[in-house]
Length: 412
Ligand code: ADQ
Image (cartoon, rainbow, N blue to C red; front, side, top):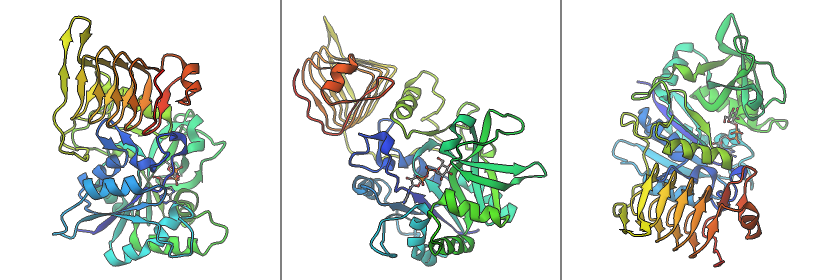
């Protein structure tokens, strides 16, 4: 069996998720009650059978490092590991110049491991994928580089690497343009393009050679999508792997091609609203391809106080362990561990992260509230955008109120 090293690019800053990325890297942003964004990429890698994993971190990596160390610690008995590797500054006193530089600076890890193939994936997406099927396709193609691809609306093409192929050889990339302002649609559907998912398989020697050449190229931006993939395309060595071919155990026709960038606050919120819908597209309960999470030793969730004028209840919601809903009503919401809700309060259409406490007689609607925020009694959030802005809360264009980690809210 061929040996595979997996590299997770986890250095992204996630500016569009502010204030959730104020003091954590985007891959460390909590998602879906008990997960962090990176758990989806790491679970895919582990479920694919690859247990030697390097996570390249840089920007505000403390909570990411802590999460990896506590959740993803593996038994070293069989030589397995998930190793967070911060920027090594091997090439001078600067952080990674780009994602290709991140790999270049970490080449010693590839040299030590001596894999046949390297799987490189981003850490910012929610999806399921069996990378072993992509590695098999890569080996069968004989190419040096394979790029995973998914159809996306043409209006979004300036956010993706856009892949073009010739009808005579549809599995070979003939042109790859990173985030084009303008591009042509697909022949069979002009409203769509074939977009890179930012997941790649490389033959190890070819990757080492490519990033080494790239490091010595003064004109390069040292970016995987902008520089390394086009380098392989120029050599006729880049193949495309259509995500639609990927058949993950336990997936349904509905969530088979689910792949979401939750890189904006509105997209992050929409993905949560999908999770709590009665028939979500993305099925968290697929036991054949589990998403692993850090499970702390906290008590079960509890609902108390059903009396006149108050009911401790939650409907159409995800409720994590350690939550206590005491005489408050919750609907269409995601509650992370240790959230506390007090009497005569209502929380609707919201995402509350770990340890948020909602006092008595509060109303919280269409809000994302980051960890450790204490909401004093009689506070209203998400009901009046102007009032929320005046208090210094972030309100998105679509009217979503977002409160950063640990924000101290003055009683109103
Ligand atoms: P982007 O996501 O815009 O496009 P990038 O910002 O390089 O590209 O992020 C890719 C991954 O690398 C993310 O997981 C990010 O966290 C990480 N990353 C970014 N800079 C890094 C650094 N210096 N060190 C370590 N990790 C870093 C990419 C591709 C496109 C493709 C989209 C799909 O370039 O071609 O279409 O992903 O979303």
